[in-house]
Image (cartoon, rainbow, N blue to C red; front, top):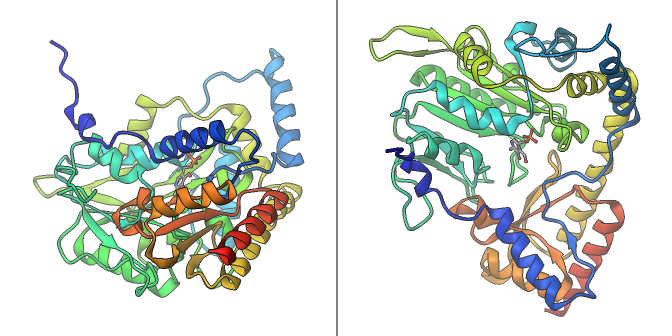
Length: 412
Ligand code: PLP
């Protein structure tokens, strides 16, 4: 008899974005004339930059010739990409890194979801609340999270609950934890950690023998020079942290797919009988068994992001989105709404007015303005009373959405 992994049965039903899509479909069927604008999407809208497109064409031509055709690639990714990453994302910022500590992937979702496989079934995980749901759901699939409680929390997960008074900064856990997921700049709150705050986490992990899984998918959006773009800027992090990067939001690769995970050679965890084991060989072993690499085309395209033209063009796209973030921030301020983020991140985390619930606000704004946001409670119980807006729209869509929101809020 084939028995299923019953941990899957405990997962909450619909994925947040499917529920939103269903509600928007229902609205459209009732208002076929309405021009719906989404300030809720986490996907980018600007096309790939010319340097990336040229690299894709050139790689496609190579694949067409018998002398230049590429089949399966090296298991950790092509050296040309890993070396470019080391040079530009680490050495240029004064962070020593070796190319074989970089593992190329097809985006950060897979690796942030899969990395938990390296740890024991009873490893205790800590996540922020609100949180990017992949960290919790993948651990739930691995049987590490206990029971899903009525309030939306899991019984065995330690929540580092954020609130407005604490600026949605995570507090150190008060009980022992083994794995700590941190994501900065943060999705969904748009908040960042200062160097001093991140040092506190590295120190905590070192003194409590915990591993930090640091999701840096949005590091390219950091504008303030003092905010760390990698956890390895922090002394002592190499022994306690793995780090996840993505070209999705940096360079518009959401449809092309490429990212990378950093597993330093010094990063270790313990066996039941107390031996220290390095995670790097385990991760390479896991990947070479279950993953056959990002395509040659994606890796050539990603390498083009690091050329002088590629960098200039990609920075142009990020500046484009950050202009939206600035406009949204200005308008929220003008409307007197409290919010976080939008300065070093493409996300704005907005407190709903008059104590409205997240879904209540989502529905009221959709009905009144045909503008879509993301209900904060979809990212965890502490997100209730908040919605997330994103800066990933076009300028025209963003301007129009803000115009409608101002009209609605001033009427309310
Ligand atoms: N990590 C965070 C925090 C995200 O918000 C996302 C995507 O929205 C990802 C990782 C995954 O991105 P990708 O798989 O496209 O690299």
